[in-house]
Amino acid sequence: MAEISLPPPSSLGRNPVLRALRSVLLLRESWVGLVGVLIVLFWIAVAILAPVLAPFPPNQNLLPFKPPGTAAPTGGVFWLGTDQLGRDILSRVIWGARRVLIYAPLATACAYVLGITMGLLAGYKRGLWDDVLSRVGDIILSFPILVLYVVIITTFGPSGINIVLAVTCASAPGIMRIVRGLTLDLRNRDYVAAAQTRGESSLYIMFVEILPNARGPLIVDACLRLGYTIITIGVLGFLGLGLPPPDPDWGGMVNETRAMAAFAPWMTVFPCIAISSLVLGLNLLADGLREISLKD
Amino acid sequence: MLIFLAKRAFFMVLTMLAVSLLVFLLLEVNGSAVAVKVLGPYSSEEQRRLWLEAHGYFAPWYERYFAWLGRMASGEFGDSLRFKTPVATVLWPRLENTAILAAFVFLIMVPVSVVLGVLAGMREGSATDRSISILSIVTTSIPEFASATFLSFLFVLVLKWLPGTSGMNQGFDVLQLVMPVAVLVLYDFGYVTRMMRASMAEVMQSPYIRTAVLKGIPYRRVILRHALRNALIAPFTVIVLQINWLLSGVIVVEAFFGYKGFGALLLEASLNQDIYLIQACAMVSVFVAVATQTIADVGYTYLNPRIRFT
Image (cartoon, rainbow over all chains, first blue to last red; front, side, top):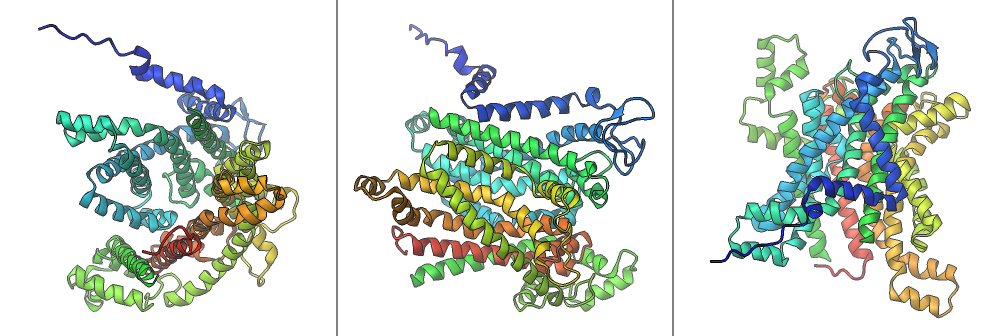
């Protein structure tokens, strides 16, 4: 019997790297998105190159309370000044970027894995799955979010893992709602019916047929949510419930130094600029992506 | 209508019950941990055992849950470990202070975001629209503690116009409220503005607005009389739900400015493991949150003539 040869799928359409590149190029059309990408890439570069860029070790005590631009005794300059323990603020901001860019994406990714699974189950299986999962989500979402974080983290203690877990539990229901809504729409499409007729398992249909087609709104949401997670980690640090010291954490830096901000304001202002600019970058990127997806 | 209200009330009670169970599991179910918090880490095994027995902690957990639930519902929150007084005497004045703060925030935020949202949504894609949307992205990107830092730096340290704390130690002072209110408005108005804009833009595309414009009614009148009334329906829910958000927002702002409100109390209670105070704060905030959600739902149904009561 003659084999039916199919043409190879177009390489540009299939290769994930090329496709990612192409969508980045699309951002040219939105200068807002472009600015966002540049800010985010800047901070990613800073986080990766932290050991090279930081002029001093982030936890080394040198000279306390030096204003920005003071010369260091060992050579070099404290470009952003030093804090109450004499640690170089520029180095701490740089290393803080690495820490926040490890924990925030990790927490967001965990929330997405849980939220997507819940949303697909609720939207595709319907019935009891939907009822139970939606109701659990409603209950968690009815909690004022920061109250939930404060209660969870003071009960189990502030640590990286607990923060990731708290963010996962608190964000997953929101993601579930979005995925569920998209799934309810997509499950009636012809390609899902085709897969069902082929006898594919529901797991395959949910993750291979439905999920990839729901990616557009999810990518925009992920950018916004990542920004929001960065704010959350910052706020927890500010409240003294964040990632444990002494390693630098932007919110924690503000918390440790704000009592002395009246005469040494540079200690609090620079970490605040860092966190605000990173979140701004992500939000601008999300706005640009949304604008582009509306044009299509 | 009555059936609809009963349904909403039922869901409200159900959510409250589920959340109370969650709070109980988090904080109360492990009796010996409670004993350590109440008696302190240096209490002896014997003391803890006696305390647990005296307070009925050896009963099965579901019995304890219902007893606890009864106390919560009747407002018997127990004694605060830190303030050494009944929780209620600490809690209510703090809630009052936060209500004052929230009232000012709403008084300023709602008009500002409605006006900006209408201006942006009136002509979608115009220069005004783009600038307002970028402004709202920028302000919502700055966490409250960061904007509090920036505003304090500018208005307290450099210009010396405003006091940097809001402790109200010499009695109530409106000037001390300016900074906390400004920070909360700044962080929150962008979101409400976006919702208002989206709703306005949608209304502007509807046929009856086109009819009104083509009839030759002055543009101003079209916006104020025809568009605005319908465009306000959807954001109503969002605005009411900001009360829920404010419960989170006040924690940071009150901690930053030393304002003696509910948020600062919750944080203080949590940091000091003041278990009965935490429980009371958590339950109160959930009650406020669920109640506002119910009000938002009922109000939306009432305002929107397209929804029938079912």
